[in-house]
Length: 211
Image (cartoon, rainbow, N blue to C red; front, side, top):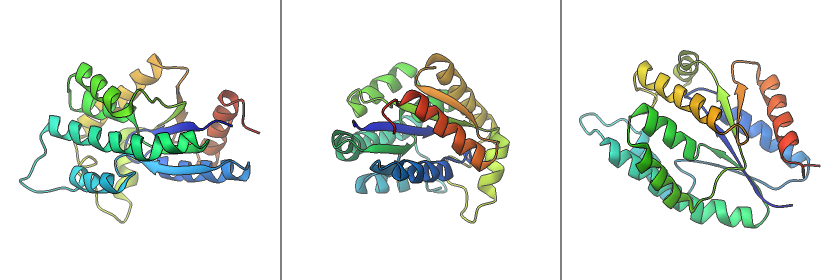
């Protein structure tokens, strides 16, 4: 059985972490070797980059293109060190965010040049794309309310304006419309169990080698 890259995407508070864990447990019950990882922060270098990108530092703003380049650096290291080696070993990788996040957040959210983002994504990934991307679609205000209810404070991205997060949401909608055979929308407002079973059905329908 060949390795597969399954990416979970969505706005803040969409439920990616919970659904990735449930999906990992299900796949492991089928005898499949699973790796859980994330961007940014899927490597030791990535953890340092994650801190730089997400910690809120007063009077120390990160320039928008700098932010884009830091995400690209994190992705390049992640692909080389974790994704490609584990895919070559036949493992299933469940990844919290990948290239679509950059398009949605830095492209739609920040308004950066899409050609530049496409070029950087290509360089960072070596053309490695997801086999399936699960887009957990929730209203941005619902998602942010979930994040505010958590014990930890909001990070730098989560503290952006509602308008920013709505642009990100539109980015995901446009991406799903343009890539219907790779990106699958799942209603993230439904119960955790219903969302999980919907994801199972998607994976079974499109990964024929699943037992």
